[in-house]
Image (tube, rainbow, N blue to C red; front, side, top):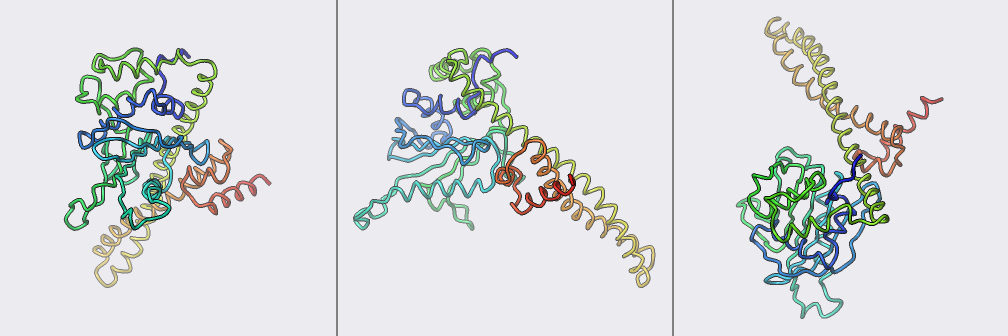
Length: 346
């Protein structure tokens, strides 16, 4: 396999290398300004803390805590998520709450009078989208606190920007602004062999220059390759889960509908004694199909979870803790599957 010309920007190592250093902060400023789409204009930023690594290597995530200088000193957190994790929204709420709480002085809080600076969480979602259908199709979700009844913004100074990179499908000729250009390179840079004409701007020329794979030394290449492999492994697990879910739901639907029709016919015959055989059977079949579909979906989802956990145990040899996070099931469920597998081996 030939070497790539450019590194994959949304692998952990590459993201830290490109966006996590003081000399390259102009790149991160440009990206953030693009995401705020004119609502904010950042002129400088300070890396307040070192980046934090996720709870486990398999899950992996990069977080930068930044103090951004704009018209009033907002604080931003940017995070790269490589795989769908449970409680994503709750974790982002936790991060934002911590950033707010950390602003409180140790003493003299009365004099401080809750003078909280603006806090924003920016999440790059690579390879996955939100699970809800009404949320999963957009590229950007720009979230703030609002009045549920009127939809008016209640509090402007706490916000969440979710970027579903998987949904960005524009080609070079369709790029209209710097946000489009950033999303394009985040998704496609590792596939390119030269800087496209549509990206001929100083900031992107710098990006392409420092992102050349050939400029990595031996140690840096090793670190990048490990990071890339983890990303590929996570993507393989995600695709496998989607395939298993689709197959299991289809199987469950077929079984459920068949059983539902059978149940419906029996109910229809019983109803037919009072309402007329023909009418009763027709209504019973209709009821049975509806019940069958519902039961089929539930059964399909359950079979999917069992098969996914079984394969994560047998094929990938993952620990129970990691399987709980990847498959989004309970620890008891994983332990039951492992116990069943142990019985089968005896």
